[in-house]
Image (cartoon, rainbow, N blue to C red):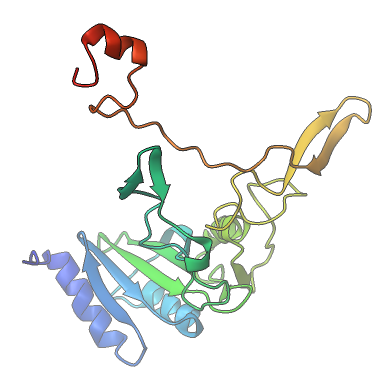
Length: 236
């Protein structure tokens, strides 16, 4: 049974349905959070309405988060198929969503209306290869660094951004570390060379591996032979 919406959320939902009826938007409430999903080509136009229209008044952009849905809903450590030697990996690389799938990458915008004391989550899928969205820096100036972070971590490009550079990784970093297919060991490693007196890059020497946790069970399979003999056999 769905819980009734608060007065503020109900008012917001009614306003979204009234003023955005000409746009290809969907509205849903998940865990008490209002979520508006819209196409990439309508992002800036709808963002201006959400900021400036008195029914919304979302004057503050709190955050912009990138999302990679390539392995969404798949369990990395599926215990239902665990073997006698540990957990089985639940995700196969072949099951990943293709990189050029228009619904693989998305940007999620967290909006706050101080005047109406209400929040809204705006989700937009980033189509293309590489994925690209229009920048909303012209709507909310705080999007500047947030969009740079989404670009750095997920490789989402923001068309019209005034200075789209990496912001968290180093200058020579290869790839985007929050993508699901990014190797845990990375593509390059770095260290300080005292002779050159600078940081240098080299090929990764660490071999990629999967750490399988050891599962201690109560059936004695991990008990040593000495302990079993002292306790009188396998039935101990």
